[in-house]
Image (cartoon, rainbow, N blue to C red; front, side, top):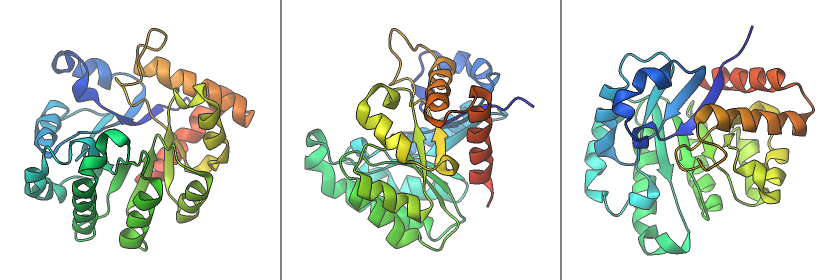
Length: 248
């Protein structure tokens, strides 16, 4: 049996002309979590992808936009009970966003607290330059719950990675990570059972990789070399991990 590909983190609503290409994306052999960047975008995305068989929408509050959309937190909470997938949420400690870090943290903490008051979620998390604090906040508030955490495009240190592994968190990797030595080192340290693939499309597209299928095929090929498995076996393993993620 041939498995589907898995795209655990992408931004389909940012694809040019997506309103005319929903069926095209849904017909791809890809199980997809498409994330949103602000609360106002969730309901339009739900409507856009309503009825699709392979695409699920995440309710998001991107840390890069936290200060800009701070007033929309109530809107986030209003949609929370009906949303199974949460993302993109998290923290960003990059120099460019340091001036909004306190706002980011306040919103992220409130998001996590709100999640504890509702049904279990699948949460795809941004943690660039803020890995330790992001993981600590998630564990402190969500330990012992059935919520599932995916650390999207992890780029932190080994100690934090091992801590997250011990907590049972998943990691979604993309083809860009295979192009750097640091990315390869990170991938090699992630247990096979806790690894998922993503594209983070359209942000990862370039002259070589122009579609989600190309991105995922490239990532599967890279994992095949790292794990020393046939590509179809790698693809099957990732799909199995994704199905396990969906178990309540």
